Image (cartoon, rainbow, N blue to C red):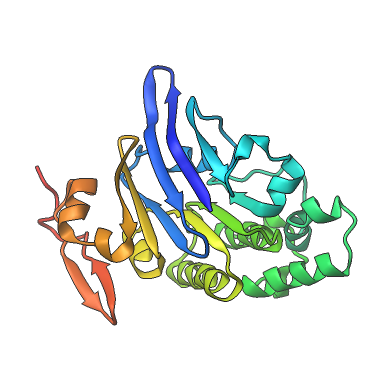
Length: 258
């Protein structure tokens, strides 16, 4: 379990995340949603130790994340940032192999190779595993980075807008894979999403932020309704039921509140 307690982060005098308290339940997909500037990515960065909080704490299994050894933390929590830059020329397979570093320290064994192969297959990258990253499309690169995170085989997987650069087909593929990792392997996924329909269809729980503050936190069916979404986005968003899922019609011409 991950417990986020009274987290606050300021850049200068401006609070970007302000007194947020949330509990992330194991074996679920929890989506962070909200408008631009809501503090979603900053909150995720503090959970993953990429950014220090000004006040508050994050607990992983009752222990402050700051007290975990980096080598042990990397075996429990993996993170994919919005932007990923590598200044060496790597193949897809070499990148995915980096996910095994907390275990192998660069000396891959048969177990490492097994996880690498599984991750490549999950992301449908086996056929291009020997191609260099700079030869790939943006979507292919994004899938390779997600495969690296999957190969890390952590209990907690943190993803900051992983659907960037992906077309509809591969976005659906990613979300289905994440759902499978939770349902079949017992992983816990925390994901920042802009598309509230992906959050609606695939999440167990939604954490909604606005102006750095927690607006709503609860099961998906409690958050995906027009009244709550208006509070989050300042828009009237009709909801449609489709195959048991709630779909948000946010492109509706009369949806913006003035």
